[in-house]
Length: 333
Image (cartoon, rainbow, N blue to C red; front, top):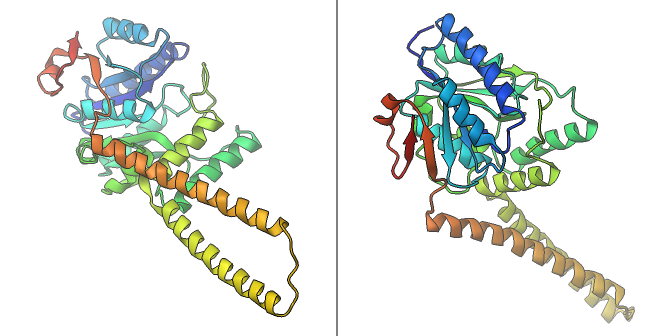
């Protein structure tokens, strides 16, 4: 492997004070091993992105940077969500790295899989997805809902990699292509596969969270899934149109049936079917308006063209400041 490969790891953090010391320790050990083997250059870096944490996450990042320049830190002006935090890190380092790897701070992703990812990168792969090999440690409910989530996403038109989250390798070439995607409503799990290029998969066993609480409980996961579907696909609107055609055909059949009953003298006055029909059609109408409203809301946000994130501080090396083009950012040593 070439020794010129400068690896930047990007790790979004939100209230991760319990796990961050251990995460930094393990990553530092992995970097030392990779550098000693000549896999990555000795000016490779680990970038923690503080997404408006309310605990001492940023203070820990500052301390890590002061103790060892291998650790860098990005502080967003406020909480912008996991996907925007991740994107901010990737877009910041895209011009100063040869290759990047993103992962969560909770140590559920297998750090040892980084070796195989880098090996595939040297073989010419621009994007390498980290994919869970199995879910043996999950409960039945967790496994059922998680796998159902990926199947639903693909069925609804969001082309994502099964059992892949945000543990992935991207070359600087892939990062610059990712920068061309300008939408405000971000769902990187669906956007990155759209880039194309040469891709591959590395399978690994996902561990339990080392410490702290999960940032994706069931309700938030469902919301995230809906965000992904509506950001990447118009199938829900198409489904509403198909449902409308089906209901119209059914209504024609009911009309013919009612006329036949009327002219044959078998009309039976009743309000049950009428009430059920009104409630059913009314419910479908409200659901349809809700889905369409979600799309209109996304269009509204896109037309505003607001920044997806604002970087308040960036703890980095002096040499990197000259390369990175960030306005209104406070750089710190």
